[in-house]
Image (cartoon, rainbow over all chains, first blue to last red; front, top):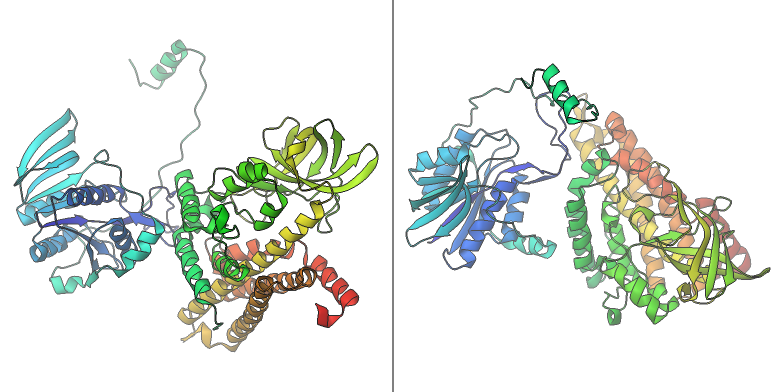
Length: 250
Length: 387
């Protein structure tokens, strides 16, 4: 195939302990390490492996977010993507808006395959891929843990509640990827420096004629209650009695 | 503030900047978690530093090092000094004096493994009854095939990540004192007691615990150089450390000045930027001037090392640079906290962190007062033109 498009979201790094703003409007992101959403990183790794096996010619990465998203796109370029596109928007974005913006990019670029994470680890929406597939009228497979490219189709193994499901879908297609698909490569610092020469286009969402008005209003963001300390019991009988007293077993 | 530097120094500046750029986004996370980063991130940073050659800057090419000039090392540490929470000091850095002092077996088992990160050292020099004057009470009694060490060491920097000590002790043959010596001592040796790990002003992952040595046996092969060489190596180590402290202080001051300037330009007070207030301008202008002076002293002293000036006179000059740069950086940090106001007192702001972290630079590797006595002794004994 000619092109693979990979969508990357900038999120708080998964190693960071999340703190809530005192006014409970959002989590603290100022001075916090931000990274590529880990599921999206797996999607990019898969795209690069397909390209390196000679089954694709170009890997393009795209992100929607503030100017600082360029850092994550540079990391993606250092991993091996050929070029990057940033749709710059400083406010929070919602899945449908992102899907509409990505749809415009898909129309411009006409990729045969679109890869993205099954969800982002910040809002856990798990919607953008499915919405984008609908807007593009591409075939779709979600939660991929294995992917092989055929001449004009894909074989995708999906992680579902019952176990594994294997589908064959036609290209062009959208695949959202799960955790076990691959182990993304480690980016070395000199590669990040070299990646500065690669192309990174910045697009204004107004030029794509998509309304950025939100559909939702966040009322409050609160931390989960702190975990209470447990009690020590001497044997299984006591455990059973304790659970029974709490009404957790009959 | 332009100071012309050779091409290779510029190249190493940009290598160090790349590393700094990777560690800086983690500073607040480290600050909020007692200085610690997730192990995976910490390991990635250490590997990155090693891959870039930062752990082998002072080591000759024949041993696989970078063989950088002192000037080049100074510019690297100046850049790394811009980072807080010691995130840019996550690697061990063997020094060329160690290669002069150690025999081949010691180089192979202790020094070279520091370079690739397979071993980590710590320094047991300071004692409860002594400080900057480096007076040693820990004893090393000569016994068959080695020494028995007894004593207490304070501020054993980096011991929580180390697997061996450089330990300094007074060697006795019976009652006769033979002088101070340096030894390698493996962490797992019997008789080493971790007394406690005090908390300090800064939030660093590298701790400074107190250790007691109770009849600890050190084999003869772990003696570094001869039995009276301890102080000589400690001095050459101090010279280098003092220069690198000065370098880090210059880097820290530069970041503080830049952040304070950006803040003052954005913050509006009664309709005009804070940067338009003369009170703020004077603080920034003094900071720039003092930083400039410190950098010029620093680079000139580094170049003097590279051109091979007299070691004794370099010792005085290193003291003067360390004294001036550490006092300057603390003064700058104090002003910058003031410019940031309430924000300057918040731990998530660089100014607050540096305000605490830089304080020790006026104390370790010789307090400002010790540096002054060294400089004065040089002046009195040798005269101004020979310093």
